[in-house]
Image 1: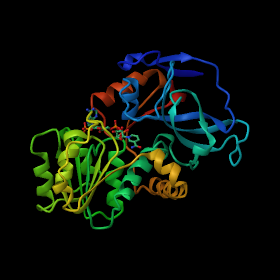
Image 2 (image 1 turned 60 degrees about the horizontal axis):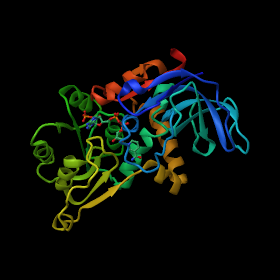
Image 3 (image 1 turned 180 degrees about the vertical axis):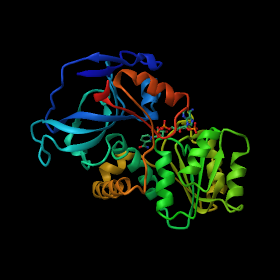
Image 4 (image 1 turned 30 degrees about the horizontal axis):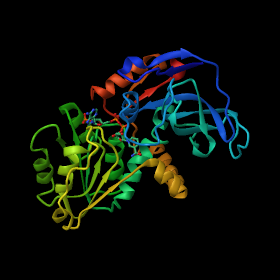
Length: 331
Ligand SMILES: NC(=O)c1ccc[n+]([C@@H]2O[C@H](COP(=O)([O-])OP(=O)(O)OC[C@H]3O[C@@H](n4cnc5c(N)ncnc54)[C@H](OP(=O)(O)O)[C@@H]3O)[C@@H](O)[C@H]2O)c1
């Protein structure tokens, strides 16, 4: 089979497509014959060895993780409740860029037969992060939601899910006119270029001066700092990524938080591990939303395993809208 390996950290060129034997699943694991694998921003950080989370403890050669959709090809020992041939999805931190992927059986999610594989890569992590951050913020109908990086793989789902959940006003930020157009087409009421000075004033204007109830922040740094300033009383900011490179939470005056502002974070694995039932129920809702068209997983490009470096280049040049997907069977 083909597998993409890194033997060092660095630019996209360190991603090498190689031949290797199909791996065997260990105890509690299954082997998936991959139909589609999605590529996200976090993997570009892993490739450069600047990924902030401590659970990332790789050993060379490294095969990066991601969202995998495919069919179960083999079962390891001590696996029950799943059959060879089942269509499944999973999010894994390691080993996803390959024709065959080994994952822990307890992370598998069912994927309906009729759902396009590239569409279905929204199910393991992007969709749950979009809905989980909105849930963590306690979003209620009528509220104002500010989605940062709203044209990205997760952000564009957040815009649609906030809209579908009855948000009163959805405002998306992005860094180019094309992306802003894409964000408006998703159903956002307003789209603001946050790469330009004064962007926060434009967001405030869009709320009639009131501020926002919810901020979903995957950028961090100054964007996070200004987001706190935009919160209306009882407003909640959920931090879930650092695409802007700022890991330090900027200084926040207690006198700002005293105005009933809430600052929290979200990690998919923590949610999945601590509230598995809620996570499973959310999966069922996402399957329905993708199936009936309430939510569309916009696929910017489908590439082959041998073109994986191009996928990373697109993400790092901030050139994409929606998700970039690898199709192993199409090389
Ligand atoms: N908490 C969790 O459990 C979890 C899990 C996976 C991923 N994440 C995070 O979720 C965020 C979105 O991930 P994704 O897979 O949807 O990524 P993606 O599709 O690549 O989108 C990343 C977005 O970040 C924006 N961005 C801002 N600063 C950037 C920079 N310096 N370089 C490149 N992009 C930049 C880009 O939009 P503009 O060009 O419009 O700014 C882009 O739309 C990332 O921060 C990722 O680390 C969190």
